[in-house]
Length: 339
Ligand SMILES: NC(=O)c1ccc[n+]([C@@H]2O[C@H](COP(=O)([O-])OP(=O)(O)OC[C@H]3O[C@@H](n4cnc5c(N)ncnc54)[C@H](OP(=O)(O)O)[C@@H]3O)[C@@H](O)[C@H]2O)c1
Image (cartoon, rainbow, N blue to C red; front, side, top):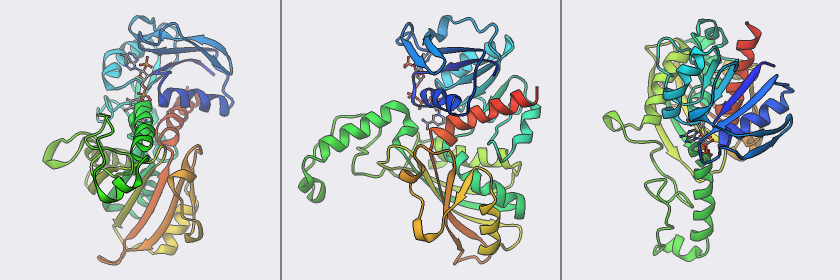
């Protein structure tokens, strides 16, 4: 494999990237790991030997061929253009460039063809959108998606390492007295990552509030769906919810198409969808089933009960893998295959 850099290498996504490069048998000609000044100098043991973390702010990108960025939008905006200018292809996990016309937004195995149009930066979609596209993409290709109402059930690892630490802490603190959870009287567990406690709770908004009462996560679901599917007129009704799950984002979606689609046809399309597994109702897929695996799991495929001819279904996927690190590595593989 090429000379590779992982930017944000100490984070939830960055560490998963290292695992995935190893699992997929890659042998980078050179591997550089970058993070903040807080981590600079730390030595990480990798399959390819010990690597010392570099401070992104002072790292020289010369010679890097593929840079997998996963250190937040601010860092991407500040440093990704310089990496691209020095010859690297940047695969960016943040939302910084996703809606830029010059930047392809790719769900590998759904719209791989878009890689041909890159100008040095390629964007990895939002983790919820990614998981849903693994089912919606093939159905759109078969029947033309017209409308989609989608509600996400997003795990705390979508907020990085801190999200997982906060959930573990709150489960520990609040779980000490079940009576208070059932009858009231619990005390704030003392975390401020989310607006309300996430332990033993559900937050009816994920992300920050933005236009028209929708959160930025919800707007990503609308805008990224349209860009990935090249379907600017698709009507998306999003609700993004945070749930007390460590890893695995689930999405319940109802879709209507340009023509009626039967359950039999949807099942046939989804059973053949690459990177996905269709499960029947005898073993419904849950976030726990999805954690640690590459495939997105699809289940509960039903005919709509209201407006006829549509399909309701459930998808769930590991947000750190297909939702982030795996897809980034798959994009890098596409880039290297087409060089
Ligand atoms: N978690 C997900 O499911 C998911 C899915 C899709 C996309 N993403 C995106 O991926 C990115 C990383 O997410 P994450 O979940 O891995 O977060 P995380 O666990 O909080 O890790 C953040 C990473 O960014 C680095 N970083 C922070 N500030 C930095 C700075 N000033 N300079 C250089 N590096 C800095 C951190 O390094 P230090 O350890 O040195 O602080 C760490 O390596 C975000 O843009 C996020 O939106 C996440």
